[in-house]
Length: 367
Image 1 (spheres, rainbow, N blue to C red):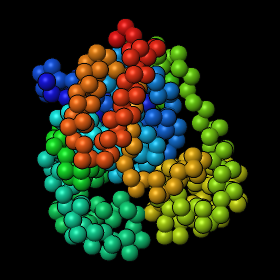
Image 2: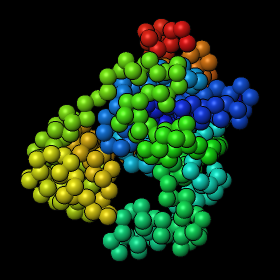
Image 3: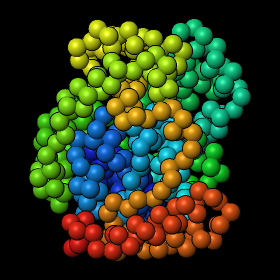
Image 4: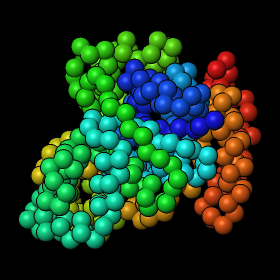
């Protein structure tokens, strides 16, 4: 039986996610689905709008067999680190055959070829030239790809999900993983689109409107009963943290470099809100999302060096009987590879979590 991996935030789980899960299962007869899901924080640089256990339970009710948590700092990091953390955990299971993800354009084969080039010395040299012109990293990378590989390859880096697909492929290459990438063309509304006429809406639309009619019916009551996170509260605390940090401390945060700590330090002294600070610091080179992640890192005491390693544990959040089979198979696969030190730690932690999760209240009962 094939096991398919998915990396997502499910914030919240909506009909587009359900479509991806169904498409993934159809690509292999009777496949099992394991999802690596962001925990309490997201790649946008803010707390998840809904409790991670509620999101995991909704995913299992809607077709996922096992949900593992993507821990900090990977879940609240840039696309490259987010993708690496998720792929690392799927690869560490030792029993995942395919990595399935949605994409706006391009095939997995095209994204894999681009990923190989992005890991080459040729890319590094071209990127430096464009960065020296004052371009943002994203624009410089796109221009370098177009110069070397043509407009078609560069276009793969213009949409959020296709870009993530390339990062997934990069992670698979770095880890020398046997997992094969498998892309599915996204249906319906684009990422963060306000469009409600296609039958699918973005998670961003649901977070803003709290209109759960676009979530699967079986999961709707979970999100209706889960109070959303107070976004303003964390922003106030993050602003206080940034105001209290020195230039030297700011320089230790993830994604801070090239003097960005000086801009943040100056803006923090005058800002009366986090949004005011972000607006003052934002430039073409420093995106709003990047700055939000930096602010969140200051609040959570995350440092750049924390991303130098790999996720140190496998933590199940919810599973059904098929998910229990994946955990059992994973534990056997890990024991057969004792030379991999990271997996040794995971074996122990996974064993502990399996004991704790034998009868997890409100998560696996009646699923």
